[in-house]
Amino acid sequence: MHRDEGKDKNVFKESFEIVDEEKPIVLIKAKVNGRGPYTFAVDISSSLTIISVDLAEDMDLEVTGRKEGLSAGMKVAILLSEVDSVDVGGAQVRNLQVGIMDLLGLTTVLQKSIDGVLGYNFLKEFKVTIDYRNKMLVLEK
Image (tube, rainbow, N blue to C red; front, side, top):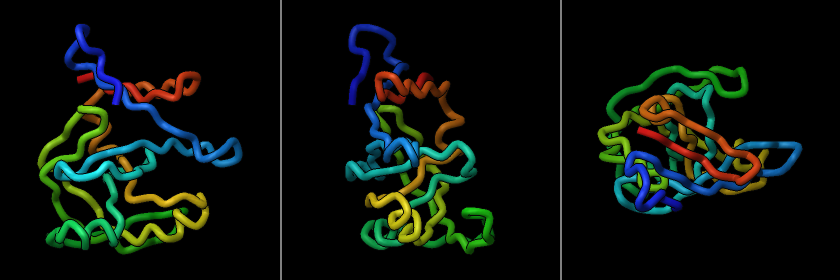
């Protein structure tokens, strides 16, 4: 986490890594319900923030519903739940609805362990800057 201390307290920075040049997926560290950090892919096209089945089971999340979604153009079943908070570099969204999905396919394709996907319902709360040159995700309230 890199917070601009002494500057704007509503600006949060988190360093990220790119999977590789062929798969330029942004991977960041996030905390869920104060636990972690966990590895999340940033996906501006995902309407929901997604938590892996394993992480949801580890956190004992309660399923509150179901919906159908798309993943790689294919229909998938998504379980719904809510977490108390998701925090990226100090930028926090509380009472966030999340989808629960098996992310094994994504983990296999990326050849990286992924615990979740940071989606639109988290990102929309901020002005988002992805600084690729400095590998920094900047979130402004």
